[in-house]
Length: 502
Image 1 (cartoon, one colour):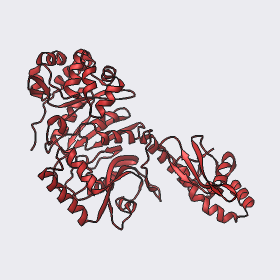
Image 2: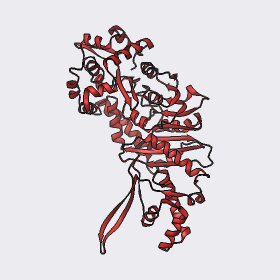
Image 3: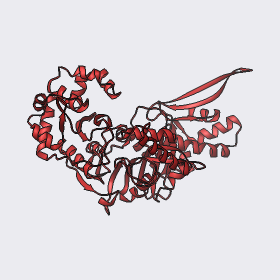
């Protein structure tokens, strides 16, 4: 099942924008009307507080109930709220539809903002708003995956940026803050139509191209690429364009990781969401590293691992299919059989940062980051690449042992040492020493007594070689052996921002 394409011209979007601005229907205005409690409740799927908060909010209240709460509103009030856009034009464009006793939203038109301002994003109504299963060409709204990629994207100024698989266009909106020229692609004609409307409504000039994967930008290169691909893993089929690639298993994520670096300028950065299979007898890190082409720095960050049963149930509900229904059970059975046949024990999900490099030995790191943290990962990804450069640079304390040993290091004030003591025959004895980074992603490292003593001396006064010499003498250790053991730890702590050059 597919849908008619929405028809939102530049002129129509200009009038719709005028209506929204006049009513105060934007991210700041909606939050002001709802207040913190109602806004939080709405995010939990509890709309009653929002209905109460909008009762006397005029045109903005009408638009909030219409587009955000999925309510039915009187024609006269909708007409007043959308003016100077007429109801006829709104209906023809697919923005509103007839409901019992009034009008309902035909599209999801949602305010969205950041610290520097706000936009509006157009997408399709979800399964709850539709009251049933979404169509095959459904265009997803701004969900948790979209927002997580927004937060995981590095925001340093670039000349050109590609949003591969733009969907509703939200990644391109955020990219407009730091990219000079933006190109957005999608295989779905409906997604491109809604993305174009999103860009017109927000006054952005974005090049839109239709086609599969990287085909629309063949032989082109960009300074940065962001991608929220159809990363759902399972049998090779396409039930819903927004999530299914038609490729088996995690081949969609593998395709993007494998091909993306070839479309980057030297030093260009690619960032994407990805999924990977956890197969019996195989390390997930070995699996994803096989996807990489030569000449690429890569940071794979695993945020979660889902059990196959939980994974299947989650995605069935996402599409509006009841897992208890005969259809839901049949789909779940086929999906779970596919997992079982392939020896799949779990599905990993996370972020991938790639950088095209001419370095002789690119840096590739795969690590788990399942703990909760508040800071956006995008800034950390940029800093991680900087630290990789520093470690590799022969002039600034490179990845050679000699350069590291000559460097004076300091432990940042955001890094704390936790000790866990247990009772023993001679009183309390320290059994665990753990470094905590209290900012960014909150990295943790367990260290032994010698490492603790070494880091205590990292105050920027002495080079690492002198500290190791003093430590070896004080503990009766051969300095060469101590140095060989310390250097890998030092490199890892530098990469995690827990030790830095003075």
